[in-house]
Image (cartoon, helix red, strand yellow):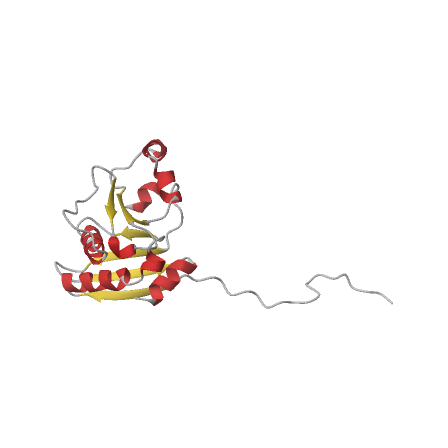
Length: 179
C-alpha cells in the first residue's frame, strides 16, 4: 500500500478572527458637542485615570479645545494653556480622584529629537498613574506606549467636525463603550 505524503494540516482549526480595534464616529456641530463629548469621557474616572489618549488632526481641528473641555469637566480650575512650547503641562484634576490626580497634556508638535523624551523624563511620567493626553503623537510615536483611545478630528467647516475614535486596547474599548 502506498501512502501519499501529507501536505496539509491533519486537524484544521478555524482561523481566529483578526483583532479589529473598536471604533465609532461622531459629527460635532459646534463647540457644545465638543464639550458634551468631553463630559461623557470625564464621567468615567476609574477608566480614564490611567489612560493614554492621542489626538490627531490638522492645525485648528479642535484638539486643544477638546482637551480644555475635558480638563474643565475633570474639575481643573484656572488658566489652561496649550503646551505647544513647553511640550507638557500637568494639571491637577479633582474629577479623577481617588484613582489619580494628574492629567499630563502633551503637545509633540515641536518635538523632533528622541533624546528630548529621555531628557524631559517622559518615560517616568508614562510609568506613573495619571491621565496622559497627547496632541501630535506621531512626532513621538516610537517612544510612547500604545494609545487606549486615538481620537481623530477632521474639520468639515468652521464649526462642524467629524470625529472618529479608535480603541485599540481593552481599556480603550471600555472607555469607548461609555461614550
